[in-house]
Image (cartoon, helix red, strand yellow):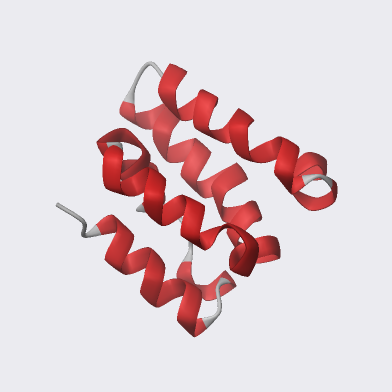
Length: 89
């Protein structure tokens, strides 16, 4: 997934959503957030933040995976938008 999020993020995005949907437990969801979602946002945040916000608005499990994204790897704007997406109720 690391290479895919780096080199072909458009292909990585539907895979990430499918991984979250198929995740059997909270631990797996957290690994997706700390792994592929983190990589996608840190490398292609401007390109994907709107889609991430949209997905978070309709999917509580996806929102949960966002809580493990490390803020130190994000721009200030992306971090602010991510925080709002996580807090969406």
